[in-house]
Picture 1: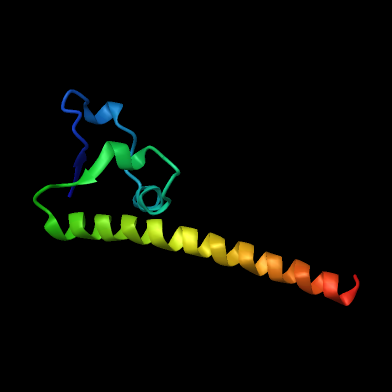
Picture 2: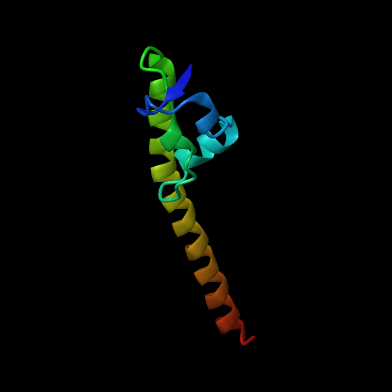
Length: 87
């Protein structure tokens, strides 16, 4: 299902071991490069896996910034509430 990402000269013993968790996390986090996604990709023959990988990556690019914005906004509201209470 997964193949080496364009490195035909690399053999199996030179590649890092595939981990679904780290691969998924590497796709989902927009700016963080865990290195797994560079070495492994779904096979071109597996259209559902390719589509899932792209949707997973797009969801990360949307959800991570929205989550960070929500968290920083929540912290600002808590600080404002403390200032109005006199604490």
